[in-house]
Image 1: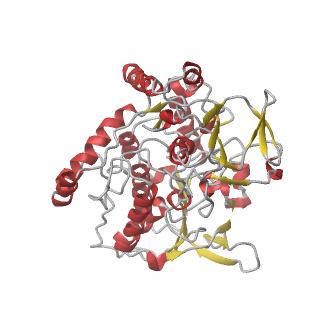
Image 2: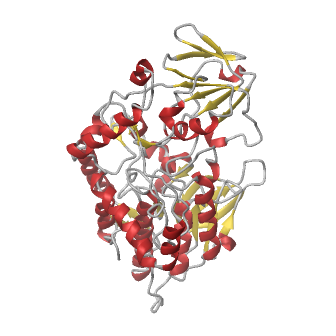
Length: 499
């Protein structure tokens, strides 16, 4: 296998020990899709993918705001088992990513297993049956129970959009929506528009909407490092080469992997300084000295999620674009009031305020062994062994779970799905009804993870609330993608209670 490749193949020559297991996958984003493909590859077709949205794609279904794109180059932000030679540019945008995921669903025959518009409301483990009872439906009287021996939670990190705690939001009489729920039928042309937030989605959408609005006011709480990026479209010759030669496509993927993999913990101070210099050079595109100073971050590069855009900073040179760094104190019926007493009239408010990133499985109502509620089990914050299994909740496997966020999430998900498939094989080989990671094993693992996170200097800079619950970083993986791949290659049943 090449550096940027995992392996979902399964030798089905001897499946005589396989038990009949019903698998429920929650979510039809990249994690759910990868799990479904992997199950089919090992000859297991007794599974259902439960998706609350009316379409597949997860975050790429919901996030359809103008300019939405991936921050990992597309040859790596794609499945190793489904390389795509046709990406139009280095960093694909949402419509292209969603179309790719749709193609994978069709190419690998997942449609019959999909149940769209089917939200999972709760999960209850039945000790006497060794089965999960999932309540699905909208709570409007049409709920049903879906039973599953195995549950794969592919809901990931980016679940519920965050609405800022600002007095008066509910009395605003103009148009207001979150960037994750873009109002497709609303025309911003000629409007006075306010964007609250200046992180990933804001950096992408602001340059897209600025040319059409009458005025644009950006409300920034803290500035982010926004680096320039190599995002030229692929030439016709490059696309033809990728299509004709799988090795060329694989080499491109491997080059991206080997470039970013060693630098994910920001331990190389020289490289970090280099990227910070790129960011400062990008900020220098802002012509006004005072404005440039307000857009310059105070924390080191990597202390918050690094962003990239060639168009964000030049947008602030436009005469009708204003940056506001005073805190918002109130929203009125027709405007936004800041701490300096200024009221700015606005027609539309766009909330680019991100997501609740630290809930994971606890976004659902989940009760495990001995009637333990997930909220009680995670009272001090989410934790899991390898980010995949959590003690007290047998036969539940999380994708993009606690402490697995770094690098290409598609790659990390493939590692996790590989581990889940290895576990299913081990359960079959030993005729196990359930597995549940031992509490002491999980505790020891998470203590080690937190010690490793403490050594990532930039994440201790006090500006990364995106990562934390209390004093613990619960989202980030403190190593490289290749180190995570090594940890998830094989299953150690000794780490689990089994029955």
